Length: 175
Image 1 (cartoon, rainbow, N blue to C red):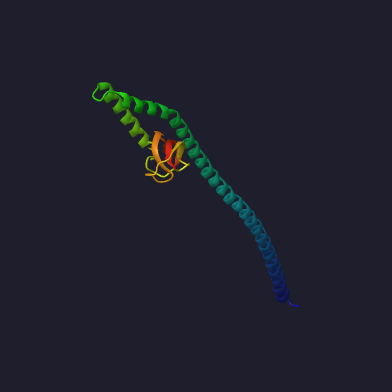
Image 2 (image 1 turned 135 degrees about the vertical axis):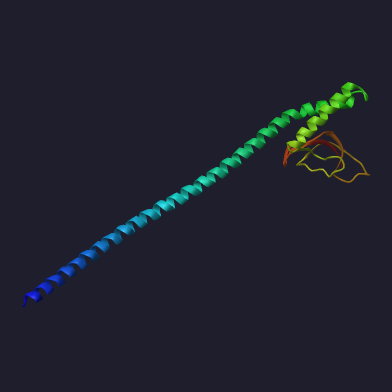
């Protein structure tokens, strides 16, 4: 065999070895890439789950906060309603053209406006059909002229905060 053939064969063998080494390195790199890809997918999945849990936590916390606020407002208003009742009684009992009556009526008007700004509304009762969800029947009367289950008289006003009943209307109902 000539020297040139041997050199060509050696070069070819080295080339094959280099190709095998490169192929092995490529296979190892592919395996390593697959491992990193799998690890990345696991971490990304955990991240998405954590993000969803955090979002649910924020929503749940905000809902609880809103409910707690509504409960606190309703509780406070429930304690203030007797003051409003007494102001109404004072306005009704005061002489027509006295400065005291005018002052009480102005305070009563201001109180009513403040309640309205807070989304507190009186419950309409007289002439309406009796609804046990918003009315508290304390008397019944037989009245042929009025329809069945109709409120004929209101003894104490009821109030609602948004859709929640703070105090039921105390009423007389016709049977």
